[in-house]
Length: 182
Ligand code: ZN
Picture 1 (tube, rainbow, N blue to C red):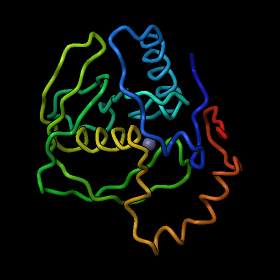
Picture 2 (cartoon, protein in one colour; picture 1 turned 180 degrees about the vertical axis):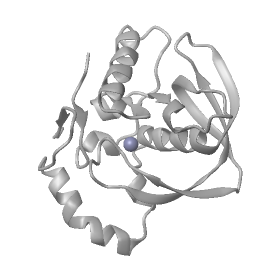
Picture 3 (cartoon, rainbow, N blue to C red; picture 1 turned 90 degrees about the vertical axis):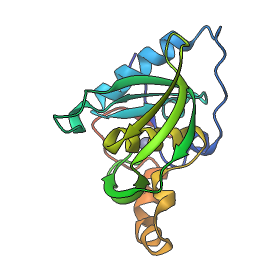
Picture 4 (tube, rainbow, N blue to C red; picture 1 turned 30 degrees about the vertical axis):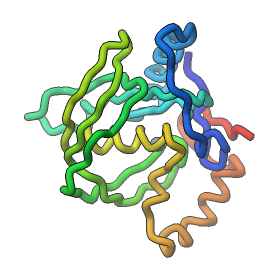
C-alpha cells in the first residue's frame, strides 16, 4: 500500500525509532509499504518514520544512482548499527522525500561498516562505499531523529528557514501523497 510520506515538522521525524522484534506481526506489511511508497515517489531510500511508523527499518534501492561498474544494490535494513565510518569524505547533493524541494550538498563518509538484519532476520556485517554508503547513512539518520539539513551551516539553514516553515505547514507540492503528522 502506498502511504503518505510524513513531512518535515512532524514530531515523528525527530524521534528515536524502536527496535524491531523478530515476531513483529506488522513487519512484512511495513516492508512492502516502504518499497511501494518509495518507488511511487521515485526515491532511492525510505525509512519507516517517514511513513509514520517509529520502528528501526529502512529500504534502499541505489541502482538508479550507481555507476555501471558497481554491483546493483537493493536491500532492507532492520535494527541497523553503523560500526565504523572511515574518515574519507565526499560532498554530494542530497534531498529527502520528507523535505520536498530542498537539495543541498552534504559531506558524508564514503566508506562505512554496518551491522543489520535483513527481512529474514539474518544478520549481516558489511562494508559499503560511495553512493550506497551515502544513502544508508541518510536513512539511518531517520531512525535516530536526524535529518540531512541538520548538517548544514547555520547560515545555510537560516536561508532555508522560510521554505522549511512552508513545508512544516503542509504548503508544498509533491508528486506523491504526503501528510503532516501532528
Ligand atoms: Zn530522508
